[in-house]
Length: 395
Image (cartoon, rainbow, N blue to C red; front, top):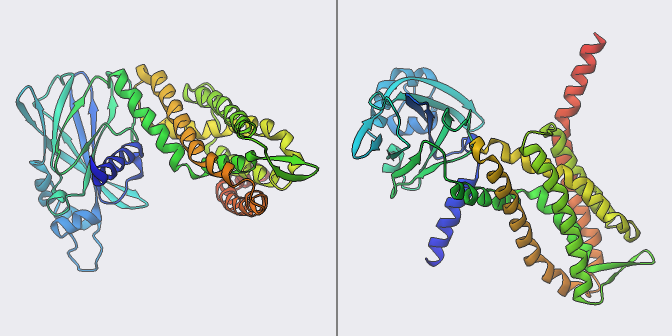
């Protein structure tokens, strides 16, 4: 494959694992709505990008507006009209644009160009979607994402996160199942989602690292000493990882199945608090007798955090258990990979005289400061809503 090919593959996997609802730069989105008797959808593109495509900025102020788009809507839609075609058993089914709306996002205004597929009165089990984004004419790196937003056949509703296909300049034709992905495909996709989430979930990684740093040490009369052999250190790590796995798996399952849910802001704030607690414990060796209890308690909230990421990924209800199990396996694989890389390094460094100072104090100070910022950011919404509720009750 080569180094460049490996990097490209990782980039595609990373893109497929991220929620499309973020509406990132340099991307377009093709959403589909499937019923037993119709197939429709929309293309979403950033207004600023469309300006660069056809020149919407009529007054020359450097910023395209929805009003300026309206003036050239026909020209824009014509650029997309022959770029999106559906094929079924060798028959082309062109899309017909019906209207358009605007969607404000932090990345700018996106134009939603709605379409129907009038020649496909009864959608088949799957279609080949041919999408050549006009942006790819000048930017081969531009990506288009295909998502099934609603599907009455599989029970998917308002999905904006689970990407079904990726349209690249050198691969514009993609097969799209309209009856749901096969179980094995769902399993693999959600394992990838889980791996990337633990790797990109910086707060979860910091929590794990804060636990691992003193795992190659032992408490002796209120001070840290290196463990004597690999087996003792490995057993410490095994206990910590197992406790964390068991704890977060419980709440990930409960939340993923809709049995128990907690407010996202509360969960994220407690996750930040968990880092602060573990980092503070690293200053006091005798407190590490409570490590497993702390991991079990806070692991429950990390599980809710994993579930919040899983929730918008849009797996069909019939495959929900498979997706949940695969996501959890992916999280564990990502976590094990971190331990495999980090643990031997920590074990090799444990006898250095400066290791206890660096690992249990300096690093912990950094973790505390970082987590404190997260806690303030994440809890501010909670306190604001509480203030509003108390104010409303008082008045």
